[in-house]
Length: 443
Image 1 (cartoon, helix red, strand yellow):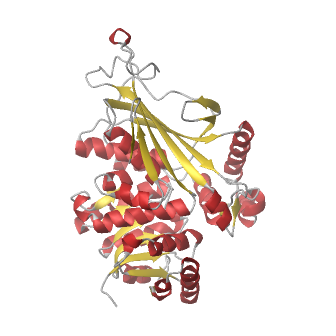
Image 2 (tube, helix red, strand yellow; image 1 turned 90 degrees about the horizontal axis):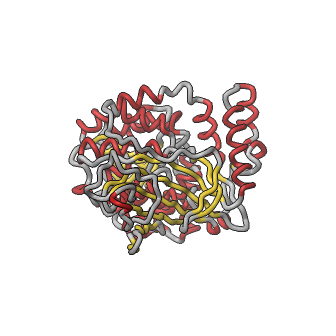
Image 3 (cartoon, helix red, strand yellow; image 1 turned 180 degrees about the horizontal axis):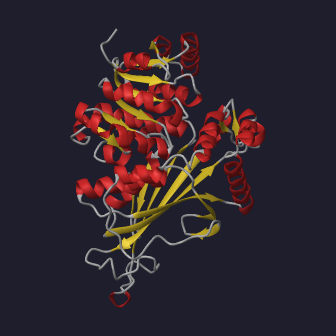
């Protein structure tokens, strides 16, 4: 047995965790890296590894070392962490099960990444463990799944390649399903319910003031105000738009805070949305989310929602998760429209909200620099998420000299912007395309 495995995946028997193991085992980029999996039930872990081995045709998967560990048992987590160079955590909901794993990692010298999309949990981790992680020289990076690698890295790519000063970004995710439809794992359902029902208890404002105490520079020009439901008409994307309730916006805001205070780069503003081709689909999801959020706050209704996830979500969530065919038919696109000022423009006098030709100076007033990044990839729920976190693992293990000089708690853009993570993502079918008005380039 090695003293420390390169990677330990905890939660491998869950739907997301099993796909993370598949992604790692299937990628030649992980050849030569030692691997272990951790969980409560040894027989279930062995059965999962055997099934994965048969599905992908890699016999070695069934021989991965197994570590018995439970998120409710601090001693078992400490033993696991002492055997890991990097822990990948796939045990959700993270607000219930995540912090003990982070604590064990930080105290026992293991780096840590997870697939959380829960802002309250992620910001609590930074508030409580940033100093200790820095002192112990370990890296803790949450939200390394589809939440929020495409958005955080996509906006960072846009900012670094923008022709001038980026003022704001409007981000639109479009999930494309096939003829078979799609159902998410019920774990995501319970995570969503827990997050919606606990918003008043989270004290997010207090936590954010703690981890981001200084004000950032702003202009009098803000992200355009949009309605709750509106129609977008861009050359690259058209459809009906709703606010996107995920963690992406809060992750990007933390990245901007870091980039300003560490790298001296002016922050931009962001709004995130979800795009639908049909008005009916937008209305149905918006109505369900509103009702689900309201009902989850009442204990009696919450028990009903917990007992019947499939019925209460109209089969959007199932214990079995999506079928293989549903995932193979699904793919995502994430559009990042950036607007701002050319170098030398006065950001306090010129309004970037005026959409005019970027080459038209209009007497030196109201001109606007435009740019677009499009991130594309496979099924975002599980295949895309596993590719994202596998890429984050490679960046931590293989690009250590390109990480921030000190350990600590970081967002994905803050930790990985100088690594080869875009190349790793491309190997998993996740690509970024940077589009200027007159040129295109693949990243």
